[in-house]
Amino acid sequence: MQLNHRPLHGRVALITGAAKRLGRASALALAEAGADMAITYLNSSAEAARTVREIERHGVRAIALRCDVTVPKQVRETVRKTAKELGGIDVLINNAGIYETAEFDELTVRQWDDIFATNVRGPFLFSHESLKFLRARQGRIINMGSLGGLRAWASHVHYCSSKAALHMLTKAMAKALAPEIAVNCVAPGMIDMGEKAAAAFMRRMAGQTPMRRNGHDSEVAAAVLFFASAPHFITGQVLAVDGGLAL
Image 1 (cartoon, rainbow, N blue to C red):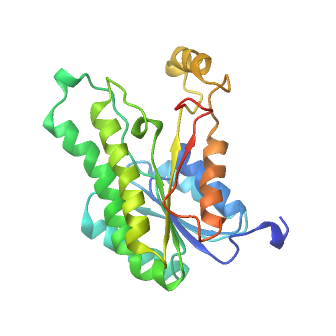
Image 2: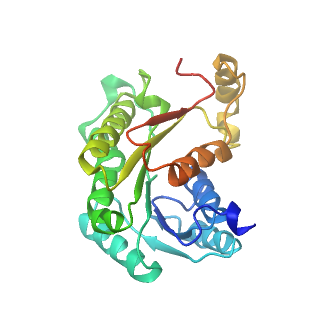
């Protein structure tokens, strides 16, 4: 790829939960745009190693770090290692998250606490620990929200609540961290990851979507890349990538 087509050349991105799925797609998109990449994983060590190899094929540096995003000490060490090994942090992408279905009358306090710990506490911890490095480079924070944070789903009360909280965290941090750091959020709708168990559900949701199809991981990654390379003046935005399903 030509250097002038690599808008993130020379920059460093840290993305949580990027061994597979949307995190992996986003990491590869940023690597193709020239960014050196640090990715985190929790239990998917083999997938993380494969993703690192794929990232490196774009001619950039890549490291994979094991991290539980809910544990402050691990978050602090991950941020420190990223900055030390790659020379700083320009873009933080809070992608790691939990998705779970639970009927409200069966929802436990443990489930509620666990989903908030990963989906809200994790992004807060990583953002807080990365401030010094991001401020030094006029950096960006990108949170991975959800259509579930924009629309209420009866069987996902704890998930929807956590993503709505993440959307508000995005807006509040955008105010709190300006003018040095831009903070935005990507909110995917129904993204078809090719899972056979979800095929019938995906067909049904495609019929309800104005664009008459579900999304692809590459489209979410393109939105992440947009915020990573867009004018720094764009901040506090929640961008739905949902084919109009939230309308």
